[in-house]
Image (tube, rainbow over all chains, first blue to last red; front, side, top):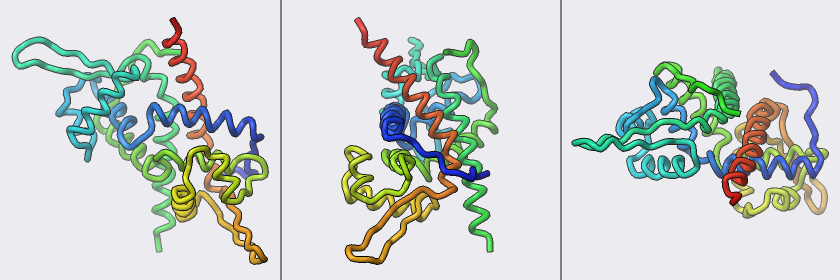
Length: 124
Length: 124
């Protein structure tokens, strides 16, 4: 699991890395954005607000509403309003959100590995 | 850059994915932790507090101190105190922090891609 030698970076590479990871965290950082994107990737991909709130456990309606607006503004989520009575609003992922696949895969794999690592440490 | 078809997930896979990414964000989420880890990966890897604060632009001493404590508790950072006058305290990455390599690579690549994408959109 571990590499034997720590990878070293030059100051320039470190600075570029800090800037790029900073840009990424600015767009998709925080507690909720990636979770909402995962929830929207489930099943057919089109979801109503209440459905989303159920899937992303622990999120309040207000926060979900704000996060969805930001995700829409930044091109990750498409919001469609069906003008009927009652009005139906649906959210789905854009094509651009697919660019996050490697990020999500690496976080998912690392999260699962880390959970196993922590549980092993906590065993008597 | 884009895939032609959106990848769909089953509710079970979605739930597992949410849990694993949630675990990852719990350990390394937030605005600073990954940046501190990148800063520590620069050069020889051993760094003093002030050096770190200079590299991680915008972080306050109080926040850096708290984040370093959490990173140490969670096994990502090793803190060494050299008992001399004046006392020297150095921080370095542990072997375990190397498990984050894929996460950091994917975030760095995505962040650079996203910045280029945003800049292209903003061009007249």
